[in-house]
Length: 311
Image (cartoon, rainbow, N blue to C red; front, side):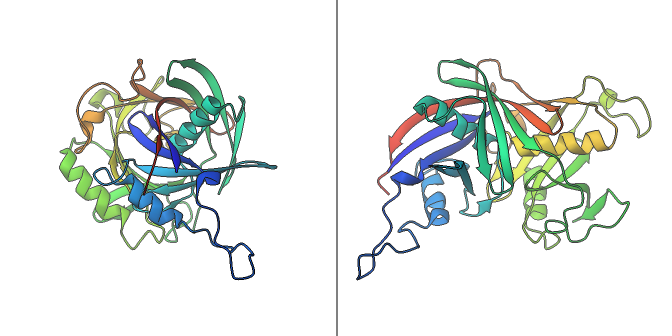
């Protein structure tokens, strides 16, 4: 089975064309069964294993059809994800490499159509503008505990702000720096807490003292921050585009930023990610998020390899 592997700021994905999956089984009359031979969730869990498989944070399955290009994503644990900005970016890089699509590209996701623009390419690195969409602070499917006119909630002793950007996020604004191991433990506790029926992605946001004014004081322009990402079904990751979008949405709602936010690509913040320059390379040290009638992420994605998975 042919696969591609990509990395966006160190957040790596495997892309598989559904046409390369084994053909559907046939019944005794020769008719194809509705269920394919492969369980996509089980395959994602298997191939994402970093010791026994290829290794990745998730798997994108795509299908080029008459109505467009269908995007489906599974996390490392085999669970379905609604959306992934870096997953979409990785797929876009593969499609451009294979000449299956032109820019601007639209992907059909579980939460609607999303646009990706190719801004530049240098060797194996694609510079992309990825549409995440509009934030939703009233999504009761992800957050059944929501109350009118309330932004902040508490879970496991942590104050957070819930927001959906197609998938669920809990954004925690931190004043004190915590050790990566402690952040990972807190992230895991929130991810699986019963408050979140679909589980949740967690972002811990850090400012310098000069960048963290009390509510009601001057707004940061231009704004920047550092974020520790703990992703649902994955764990600690060096970057997340939907997580970056969630942080931007919360800070914009609180009046701390206007239409732009720079998030440092700080792999050293993550407990399980090696220190060093941003894994995307080529100067992509920050994730730039902006508002253009919706949230867009300026993305750097590296096309790593094409391979054959034997299962």
